[in-house]
Amino acid sequence: MNTLRVGGITALTSIDFPGRLAAVIFCQGCPWRCGYCHNPHLLEAGVPVGLPWPSVTDFLERRRGLLDGVVFSGGEPTLQAGLAEAMQQVRGLGFEVALHTAGMYPRRLATLLPLVDWVGFDVKAPWSLYDTITGTPGSGRRARSSLDHLLASGVPFECRTTWHAGLFSEAALLSLGTMLADLGVHQWMVQDCRLPGQTRLHASSLNRSALSQRIQGLQRPGFKLRGDAVSTTRLPPSTLNPS
Ligand code: SF4
Image 1: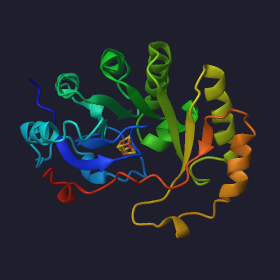
Image 2: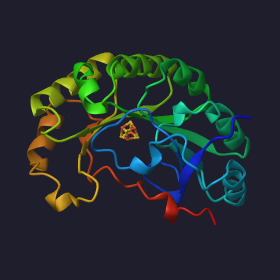
Image 3: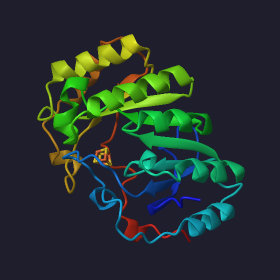
Image 4: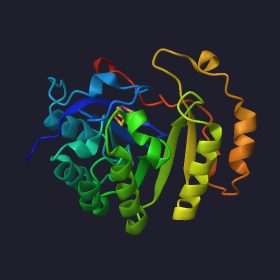
């Protein structure tokens, strides 16, 4: 097996896998470099990791009957060749599986989707602006291809966009919402971007009420401004001891 490299784990969450009590496994490594990334400690793929995969499965064994599901987050889980086998093991323990991904490996995502019960899919920006956000040429094309796979799969999913006006305009954000609706996306969450170390109070001058109304103006019931900022599951690995 290509052992999954895990940078941390959250023992219990009720907000990262809709309707499920779940644990979150933070996979090590991501090839993109978004300026607002809240998990910079997870970006480098080759650093030593403190959680051997067998200790993660031991932890999950002890949570059988207590948790409904397991979320593979990151970093970017689909970076790792061992993800499919890890998902199969988790399913074998009786858990449902969720995946958080930015969709940078569309063909690999397509092979993983039969193993997944729900996907949280990052849509960083309008496709043409992706490279600026991610620091990676061709990233928009890859994300678009992954979204096509997701739409074709029938797997339930939510698109999420982290936004503030310094990234791209509100008009571009609302156009992105319209584009997603036209593609057939039913769930889209806009998340108020804050930089690492910022609290929401000083994160931005965003008029949440006005933006929420404009998102509602797109007339898609599943399109919303999330009630809190993006870092709800972002705990440093040093605090994530699976005991
Ligand atoms: S894709 Fe996600 S994990 Fe990777 S740099 Fe961007 S925000 Fe961070």
